Image (tube, rainbow, N blue to C red; front, side, top):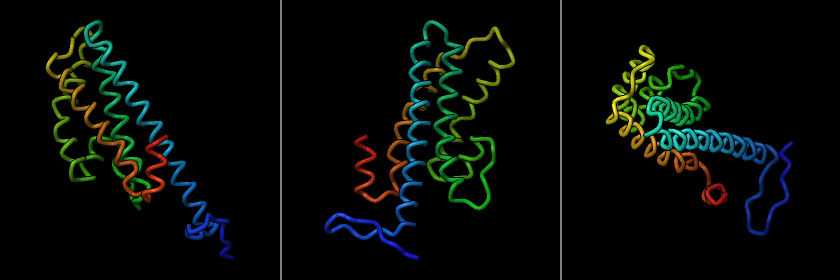
Length: 162
């Protein structure tokens, strides 16, 4: 049965299945935007701690980077028959393009986090902390519009305004 939903004058008719699909896509968008906001919150916390506790700042910034990349990987996995690797950096690399470029630039930043994990008294290299802050902030800013790329313009406009 292909029932149609009530519609506004001039708007295309939606079937019940279409309406469910739109609701599912919007629910996923809400989740992705919430995850991205959490990443931004971690980044803000890290930025606020750079002088006072650079070690904790580095950890928070790194977690923000992981969460932001996780949004992209999660979205990609929804469209794939075989899931991407669990390691988010390896998954970004597999996505190709600008995501693979981001993964390639993260090598020294991931190495620094591993060094900090091995030595509880070590402090992060200030240049790497600054770089991680800058690059993660730019990456999170780049993710937001990508979340809306596959939405019709009228839905993307509503989502961006919210």
